[in-house]
Length: 550
Image: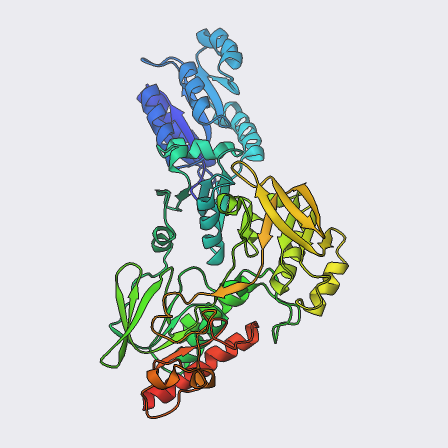
């Protein structure tokens, strides 16, 4: 970050040079010294500093300047930099005007000319003023910033995207943070342009897509090679496992992820039963460790990018991407995972992303401080979210249809929840409606036949999952719920004889298309655990080798 600025203003070249010299001699280690020969030139400089969001610590301006007097300049500068210290240089004849300006222009001090020697007549005063400025100065966040509305689904999507890639950012709520409006005005934007992403170089992206942001933060959205040995579709635990083993074994490996690494596991606030991590770790931490490992071993990633079609041409698999591009590969690993089922109640479509969230939505946890939140679902993901949210929320309510959590949640989570005083389980309870104008305000629940209307800050939904295989079911054989059939499950399907034309049976994780394998939660019969998903990803690479050797 650049040093704060000291701005000297005087229309007399000799006086201006003397001020500049004395300021640099004493303050150049901690400050940048700029100069202006008139009030208009000074205002132009101040506006440029504001547009570049550079800190201005002090303005030292002469009173008698043609066109704009020093008092007028300092009063105008206060509207742009209200916290900057303002000092007026005056001759003896202007002393009364300077004293009056202390109130009218909110001057911090005035100094008489000449100020020689500066060690006695200039530096002590400026040091005191700058120390006072430093006490209240908050350095600009040195990174990406996101300005938006708290209840905007677009803002929520961008927050989740940035958090998913562990990109540090500062969130500025337009309605509650005064800096948000100031920054927008400096960029020539209005509230109609929200959400706005401000990059480190000062560039402003108005209402950007995740792809727009991805290209600016260094993510790759276009393949670099014409042909790959294996393309892994999805970067959840199974996809990342396949990427690590594929790259480490010398295969030209490409991973295509449409959202963020980690899949549903990546949104978990705490995973405590994964082998080798006795104190647990977050899903995003696990995902990014695996992501970094795969990249180090040579895997290539496209994200965010989505595959919309798979076809076979001359033995090669051709993948069509959402942007119209294509990728050619010898083998494919489908690791598309699953997505949360939506809550089919009145108000859900209107409030999704504005108080109703699917998954842990960790980016919204801090906004729930000292508020009541509700969780729908009784699986491990719901339990992990409840424990995380209990750190911030006043009360966390877990709504389940059954009597207790024993049938669907791990024992260690049940025990933790029982020991957390601000988590309450509501058995035999369902959500009937969600209510609010532009954001969630109330939930209507049916509790064992009794309908209740309760205030709510947020509702987090974990009510099961559906496989993300809509685009591939035209090519691969899926079961009635959309899960991809592989191996022995495929052989036992009535459609097998008409579809499989190879002179061998499919490998354990192979689909009805030779060379296309499925791993993880989107595969029929898969076990919904992080460890088993990683194992299936590694197994898929073993079968890829066997297929390529044929």
